[in-house]
Image (tube, rainbow, N blue to C red; front, side, top):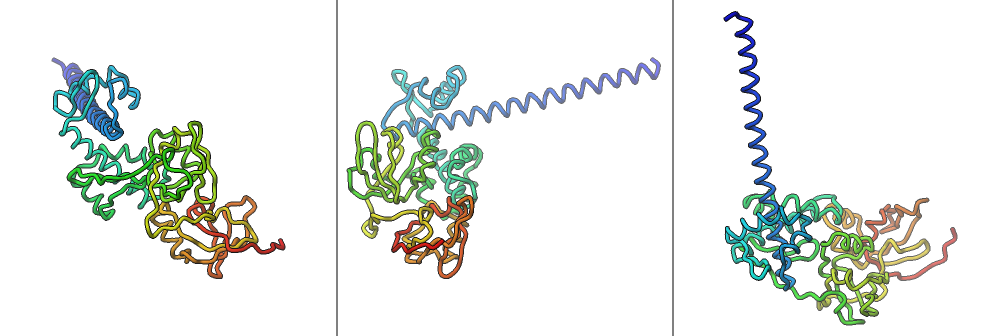
Length: 343
């Protein structure tokens, strides 16, 4: 056989080997991706069933398909595999967690809430981003990484929404909350929890700057709307939206400030004193405000306002400090007097 023919055969053999190697690698990657997707879906189902269980309800396959936005044909084989492995059990088309499934679900809930706490305390991500980012990370961390994350945060008991964080042993602190619609009228209370699902309702609550830790008082509660005051603002919400807000009584050392407002509501010519900083102000932002001397009892007034009304310069301890509105929203004040403005 001449050299040209041998070279041609060698070339085609090399091509065949490369094609076979690429096919094997591709198949391996596809199997790895499929396994990872199945694990993610399994954990999403467990977490969803845990939340359903906590609300004292039950779920069907159709309920899960709608809640997770996954086709029944895709979710069914995963459900069958979970039942076979003892994570869930079925009864009259209803799906329930087994003890092993509940233990697994609590691990997922734990890492989700720890990661939300991390995002709130250690990063500049906005509250509207926490849930989405935490859902990505909850499937990636192993036991060692979860323990390190918890330790780095000081082993917190609650996430930034007010939800209790399960311990490494699966223990969950009991909470005594009341949905806002069922809280008694004209009784001061404090927002202790804001549910972040579904996202469309959570975004609506955030847009109104209703925050965990804010003091509230319900003025009127009907089947059509809930009217309540929250730090100088009056809000009207439908019961279905208000139900995502949970309220508890004020602690013994807490006092309801009837005329408390946010610093962003202060106008030129007005003077106020600081009552406190919202617990929604975390990390670097909180340290910055404290370093600037924004402490309870500090006198504050508007120095001047930018043409676009944001930021605003405030006079605090004989120093002018510029604050953006979203940060000024987190400082609670009480007006002390209004003097004539000559501008």
